[in-house]
Length: 301
Image (cartoon, rainbow, N blue to C red; front, top):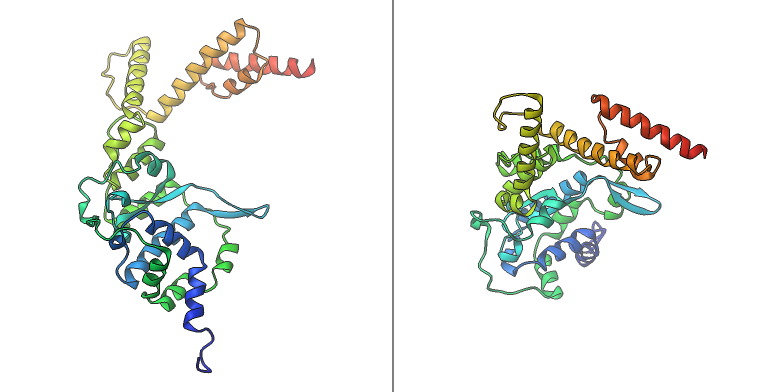
């Protein structure tokens, strides 16, 4: 080293190899072929940018000497790694863990531009270290921010809700997902948009039973319209989330009627179900206060 050098090149490599970015990169590399890895420092930094965003979106916090997250996001491949998907930023998307775990490798049709022919097999750890050493370690360290320990200790963040993550990732990838046309909750609608970015919308609809949700909503709405005397088509627009709440409160009401006959309105199940009732329904409001009275009597006894 010259007198101006503070850390030798070997120490910089060793420091990177012991850090969380290398461990994460090694875990990702084990999923795919050697040729799937970024081919230069610029590509690898873009991949690390995706990881940094995922960390920010999760919202890490420290509690009782342990790290926790406010949101559960995964970094998923748009074209699956198991089928030859490249580890490049354009083929990665930060998505809810539920979407990634549900789709697994049942998606990606039409995104074969991110696929490589699997020819060179998998890495050994020493081979992978040689690959990383061929990249500009100093630039990677500068991007990461030097000592990773300080970054980990300062993880206290609020995280990002699904709406914000979806908007940011869709803009980064140049996508405009519309999501499922089936009638599902707002939460499931957001999940469907993430899956569409990975060309997995149809698979998600099947695997998560969207068609059943759709039919249940239509049947319930049609039934309620008949009770109210409305002569309208069941496909007319209605608020799906409000209807789902209405359906849950109706189910809760039916169960509470059964518990009332059994004389069990003072139990834990009745107390839980009472919170699902809507104050806009007179019969449900009456049932709610009846449950509360039974709960009070039970506590006094």
